[in-house]
Amino acid sequence: MTRTLEVDLGDRSYPIHIGPGLLNDPVLYRPHIRGRQVMIVTNETVAPLYLAPLHEALAGLDVREVVLPDGEQYKTLEVWNRIFDALLDARFARDCTLVALGGGVVGDMAGFAAACYQRGVAFIQVPTTLLSQVDSSVGGKTGINHPAGKNMIGAFHQPLAVIADTETLDTLPQRELSAGLAEVLKYGLIRDCAFLDWLESHMAELLSRDREALAHAIRRSCEIKAQLVAEDELESGQRALLNLGHTFGHAIETAAGYGNWLHGEAVGAGMCMAADLSARLGWLAEADVERVRRLVVCAGLPTEPPAELDAERFRALMAVDKKVLDGRLRLVLLTALGEAVISDTIDDEPLLATLSARRP
Image 1 (cartoon, rainbow, N blue to C red):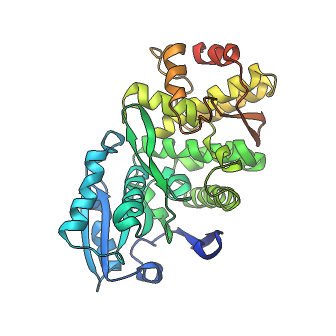
Image 2: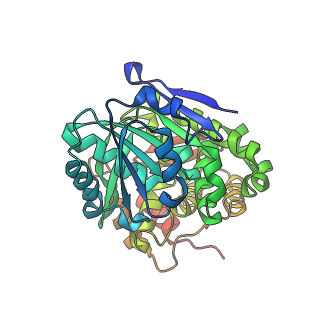
């Protein structure tokens, strides 16, 4: 069964289609194709699985593709430029449409290319991982990494549609599935304790890829994100709540070397650190911190940062973050499970204690 949600941005609103067997349905694409020229951006892992059926859905159009290497370590300026090489070699015009077929890295890079090519062209997200279906494909954040910091170069550029075919999760490695569950847990932690309760009681079904459980988790996650994006498209306020665990997590990814920790793995550890810091500030009960840790463990994710990442280095990496304003680090913390706040008044003492703590 297909479920369609909407990201309400006035005349730039767009649908999120969620369900099985959507990837090769031409009806979902045609209303959003601006001209005849379509460039599919995908990677070496996804292309053998899903490029052919996507071509079938776009039959009758001038469809080309650019296949990028797979992995966070390739989310670079040099690899990103291959998209422009393909567009210019094919002489694509301003009415072309880019289609991002893949996970979060492909979606971010294709979306950023769409934001920049001839000062902005249309694009459609076709996410094929759990993490991209519940998070990165929705909301218009696009970008690439810099050696000094993750996603530091990018733009807000909304897609015209998101087409999330849940059958693509059948080919997803288990590690990637767990990484996606980090973002799903995030939604319960920041805004919906009842959803968190549901996740706690259905984690086994999610890990075993129960179709009904996954569909519910994706729908609820997208509902929460769509609401926050509609309220605050450019992340000047409450949309920043979506960054729970991400400032810690991005520092972990940068320190470990892009691709060594999956984004969701780093966010899992980062959410545990955010809960720990919240407790040190007296905002969250210790029992709730332990519950967060148990949920992260049950999802198959790490709860601790790399042992070799010391507090001072951690703090320095966190300072190179998009959420730093006027030299002040903004962190998303918890006042209760299902309730999050954004704070830029955290003293160094509790923060360094959290950064130093390692549990057995």
